[in-house]
Structures are given as structure tokens and as C-alpha cells.
Length: 141
Image 1 (cartoon, rainbow, N blue to C red):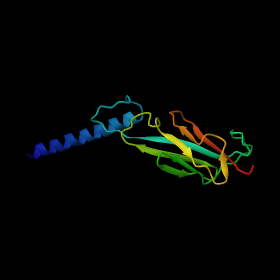
Image 2 (image 1 turned 60 degrees about the vertical axis):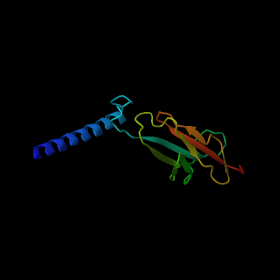
Image 3 (image 1 turned 90 degrees about the horizontal axis):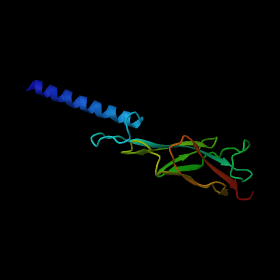
Image 4 (image 1 turned 90 degrees about the vertical axis):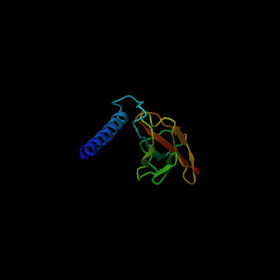
């Protein structure tokens, strides 16, 4: 009986390790994006953002245009504030997502008080490695 219990615990431990290990392999794209139902894999949607003061209101970031600190960016229900340079990285846990976890998720920026948007304030995320840029100009400019 004792040997049976030890064998059962070893078997369950190996099974748990293999499931975890395969989950890691799916997340990093080593195995295909469709794991068998027995393997639980979770992922993350991730976006880098820049919110800047568009001095000339042209919708393009110029070298002399500073970031806007403390601006709110949203990834569904997650909210992040930009740093002193107007940058923020925001992530969203996606249960059951293996690959392409950014697909179907949008990022947005709240318009700061007394400003108007010079770029779109919402983007659909894609799988490229890029910075989502949000430009705002003062209303009185």
C-alpha cells in the first residue's frame, strides 16, 4: 500500500510538471498555439504607449514635443498613468490565451483636461512590437 501511495504521488508530480512545462512552451511559441484541452495556458496582452503634447497640432510627434506625465491609458479594465516622459507600459492577464493575446483588445487614452486629441484615442492591439502614440494639444492653442 505504501509503495502504491508513493507511486501515485510521483505520477501526479510528474504529470503536474509536464503540464506546467508544456504550458510554458506554448506561451513562448515553441509548441503550436492550440494546446490539448488537458493543458491550461494563460497569457498577457501588453502595450507600450506614449502620450505627448502635440504643440503644432499636426498629429505627428516632433522632437521638441514633450510627453504628458500622469495621463491615463486603458487596456480594457486596466488603467496605468504615464511617467514623467509620457510613457507607460500596460498589461492585461488573459486566462486561457496561448498566442496572439493582443488580438481583440483595444488600448485607449483619456483626453487630459483642457486639451483635444490630435490622433486617435483608441487603437486595436496587434501582434507587432510598437508604441501606441496619443497626441493632445491645448484647447486654447
